[in-house]
Amino acid sequence: MRVVLQLILAMGVVLLLSLYGCTTRSGDVSRTDEENVEKEEVIYGEIIPPDDTLDEDIEELDETEFVVEGVIGEEDGGEAPVYEQPYSEGDTTETTYSYEGPFYRVQVIASSTKTGADKVAEEVRMKLPGKMVYVEHIGQYWKVRVGDCRTRKEAETLRDELRNLGYSDAWIVAP
Image (cartoon, rainbow, N blue to C red; front, side):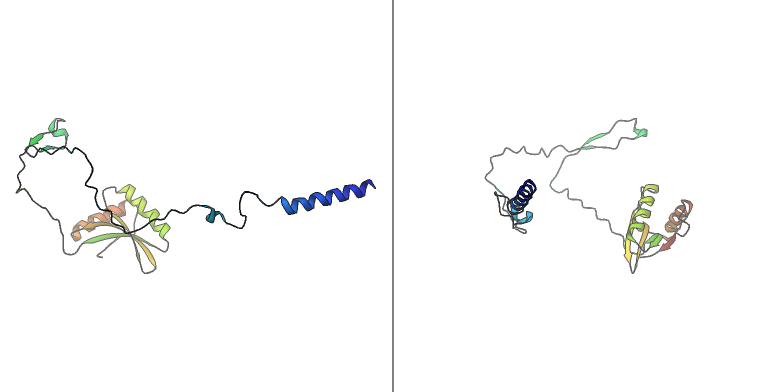
């Protein structure tokens, strides 16, 4: 008799747990986590006009003095020269740099994976910090190319430098 009572009690506990133990009373269990998160609406491309109603005091620039600090170098004795130059409305010198014509790069490797190419590119950047290093996907290969050489002679010098650093297959390309 005692075994029967224990069995009935165990079945009752299992029945109660299966019916009520897996549900929550505070919310709807059919909703997913994404539905429970409030979504913030973002409008792209909206142009917000400037607010000209702000009462800010803006300090006017004194156009009579313009101070330029120079580069501190060893030959200067460590002191930066200060130049005072008057500003005039006509000072609109614009410098543009353009180079048209052939330029050369030195290709270090052609890898079948981007990961391999990125690794070699990072090594080259560490060994030659002043040079531009490019990873280009051309065809089925990732190519690591170095430099923006304006002359063939400059490219040959860079190629020799890369070969001396261990990149024995480095060669000159004209993209």
